[in-house]
Image 1: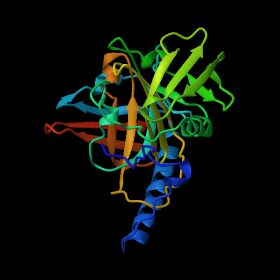
Image 2: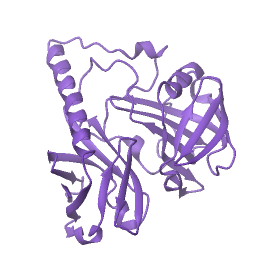
Image 3: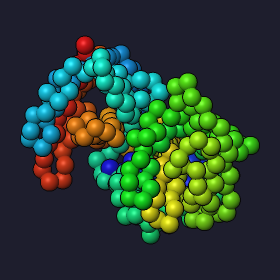
Length: 296
């Protein structure tokens, strides 16, 4: 899906303010303002749970019974917790502005866009501004040696400071470490050193920075194969101008188990209220998936 994205090919973050130059500028700004209000309203409705799944149709098969007995809580920190009294499964969720196009940056194939010069004009200062502007980054994608590992870090919050300190918290656990960036453009190296955490500490190459309304991402790679992407629900930059076609995504992600992973999707919203949320996903091959949450 094509999102309202800036890839930091600008001289500084101040240049993120984009002004429309056509006659429909005022309409576009009004539309964006309404979408921003809708995102907040939908998010608040979701956090008013807990919820149960009353309908889940995956590629024509009704799989609602897989989630019988589970209550789902959409939490303010971006965690999505399913609990049936004896088993707790944690994923992530967000509500973001989108239009109806494809966004290859969400593809699980970490090498598919290796050849893209997505960070031609990135600088260490820009990366520092982005990482320190928002609190509680989380691991959206982590792939090492063709193995997806982001599920190992569900519920972990990463906070970066300009002096090179990184603090990681998960419940009552806390880990301290350092981060350092050097270089320029597509050659910025990011060294993460965090004791007691596996798979994340390493020397990574900055691949891309994506800034959207209500969502920010920092994508790191190693040799075009291994991948680490941090994500945050904060907004960096001025999004009062620009264009959007007016669609909102309800994003759900569970790494495991398999039946919960099938809920992972950038869902489109059919309807929502404080008692019911109806979602739909229509794939390019004509399959339609349906997902309905109702308040317990």
